[in-house]
Image 1 (cartoon, rainbow, N blue to C red):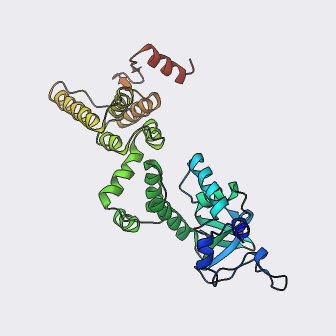
Image 2 (image 1 turned 45 degrees about the vertical axis):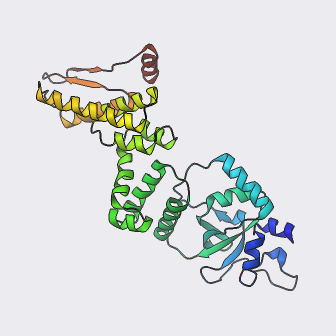
Image 3 (image 1 turned 60 degrees about the horizontal axis):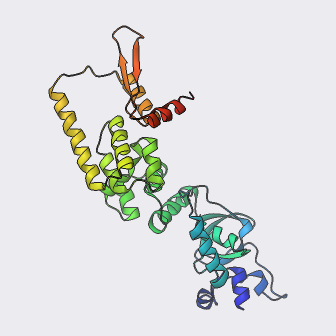
Length: 306
């Protein structure tokens, strides 16, 4: 019986609890019992479904899965079976789409499981998206950028306001706002947050800096000098104070919007402050890209395909 439980992916403890309610795996049924390959049980019931019949949820916000943790879960499933069923919706005869539980599904496939227990639910695309996003935000170890992208998708695709989103995911509005603001940071900083090279504390300090070139300068200081969150916050204050002092001195003519956008885009591309000097004579000017060392110069030249 233990071997049979491992093959179907259902853990012993769960099997004992659900003996009366679970739709049996075809291998557990007698020759006289017809196999129900297309479950039509009420929503919330558990069915055994072949893993090959389950397609990945296209709305899944998670893009990174820790391979070591996945292997450990796979080994556990081989021994104990899948304790927690996944959730799917039926989209055709013997065809299902994953709503939540992609990590469990991946680990089950890795363990060689051919059938796993699943809750079969009825859900339209918007409900699927919302359920998948909420399930991941609340129960999976998403990085801060993945959470921010999930929040953004819920607002845009589920037509939610920030207050409504906060209620759905049990977070206050300021927390939701801080996550969403991460998506306004330059791509190189977002990538560092995603990869775990920059903490949420550092990110919160950076989002309080308005200019991209200053964000990039502070980011480089944090990475190169290993600044703590407290020191990063102090550096932000110093940069902002210097900005205020500069305002009191000579005022520069602000760039037109289209030139400011170009300057910001270049600063993001080269991960350093870029100065666009536009002369009054139409069509003339210069681009200044400063560098801090020979290595920094080599990096910039590489980006220029030099």
